[in-house]
Image (cartoon, rainbow, N blue to C red; front, side, top):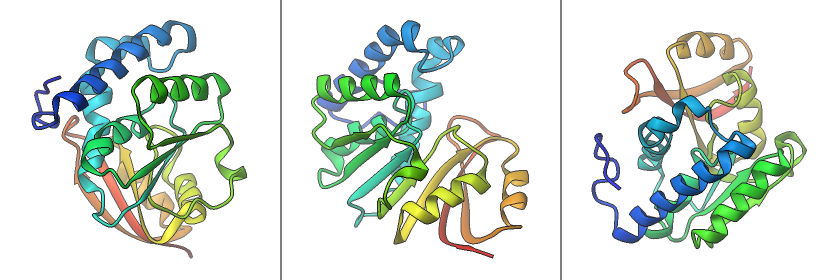
Length: 206
């Protein structure tokens, strides 16, 4: 699998085949479960795979647990797990998805792709015991204020949150600062000039 942005340029043949296999599984299941908007399927690699994979570049070297909140069709969590299988073999990836049908898809995909580093938790985020994750991610799940509430509960003490956000990320940051204090780095997205990845740590309630 190749990419116009070069995110997948250096991956192994095995990783490339897993990414292609994941894309094929998603296209097979999507008409039944609606994992991603049908209008985005023609640009599946750029809109979903590459957009998810860019988060992996910010994995701390010491990280051992990544928790993906509201994993849906596997973005970014399953893409992270595919890359980690080769490049970060000590990393476990937890996919948290309360929709039972989507959780079934995630389990099936992990099994068929041979990903032993994946655990699927088919529960509500707020009902789970704290995950003590080194990294938390969430893509198109909720406003930043709500994500910070989840992150405070499930992050390890020195963990980081990686939240892709669109053109209105400034408004979400302003709203969140009314209730939270945190350290944030705005990293430009490689797939959307108006989007960023918010890399957040030091989360505490005001």
